[in-house]
Image (cartoon, rainbow, N blue to C red; front, top):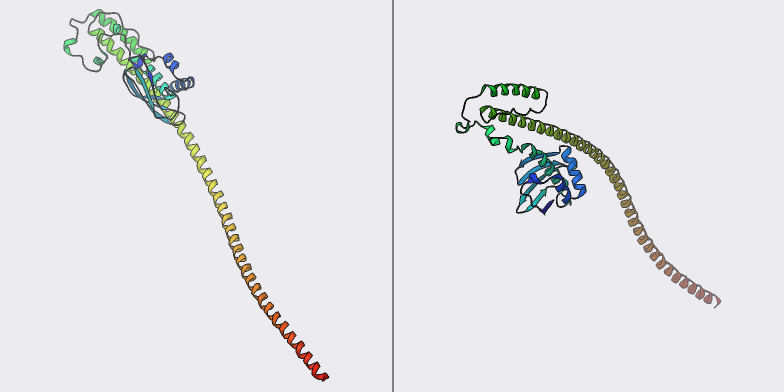
Length: 289
């Protein structure tokens, strides 16, 4: 399935569910929403303008490629459905992208440094100057105790304490980002677990269908053998009939030959009878004389 539709958005994250619903077939949107809710979507790669994903449909695993290019939204899926301009699998991938991308959108007012800076040591040139205040350390320690308790009880990390820009503020931002990534990993793990269960269930159904097909195949083989035996029996009977027909034809030829011989002998006997009558007549004539 391949579709193309005009789109004014410059980022995929701007395509809300209502916008998607307004341009696709109602049945395709409902099924795509169901697939996304059942965690059947696996994001492979994504950016602001392009994503690749795989969706476990009812008949197999399908791959999607969706991109924004020159004012158009182009959707391509490996399925053969006729749903336009986006099939149910593409809808599920777009809805999953919305859920997938939202946790990654961090308001600029709450983040003093880019997200990537939390993944590597901060260069010395950008570390705020000045000594660490005791009050900030106290606030940080109390906040860390609440963070540890929130993580142990599987609750969101509490808001960071209000403090000026500095090393302690950077620590709190890094910890919040680490917790955000931890939660994203847990969500991804849950999605993977559900996906594995769905695939196991599908594998069980396919195995059951295969067993049924094997049994049906064996039954059909037995029926074919019975039919083959009947065909062989009819062939033998047909051969016997052919032989009898040949024998009848041969007998007919022989009977005709015998009839021809008898006819010829009958004609000769009639001639002989005529001769005998003539001789008798002559003998009578001579006797009278």
